[in-house]
Length: 80
Image 1 (cartoon, rainbow, N blue to C red):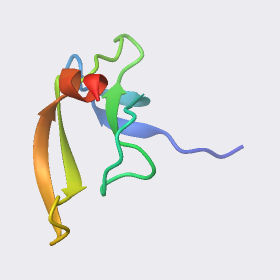
Image 2 (spheres, rainbow, N blue to C red; image 1 turned 180 degrees about the horizontal axis):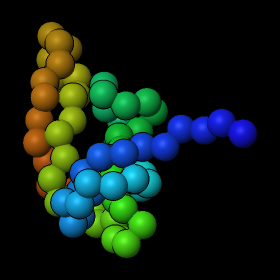
Image 3 (cartoon, rainbow, N blue to C red; image 1 turned 45 degrees about the vertical axis):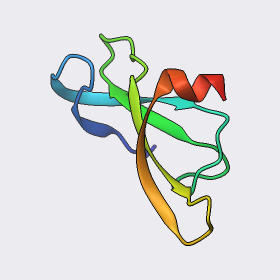
Image 4 (tube, rainbow, N blue to C red; image 1 turned 135 degrees about the horizontal axis):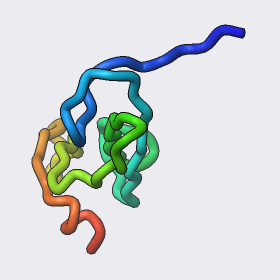
């Protein structure tokens, strides 16, 4: 049996250990993820993952002249 184990720093407690992933998905189209924006929190088995308060997104400019990287509060995404 083979598998992949993630190892690193827990986003919640800061301990270096094996990690699990929790995806927080948002019903917002972006250029950085497909089809909808999401954030990943890496956490150890002792911690409950905590939803981030701020996320960075890449979105198309309104005038269609490219893209912009923006920071937005998660609470604002939930209102869209």
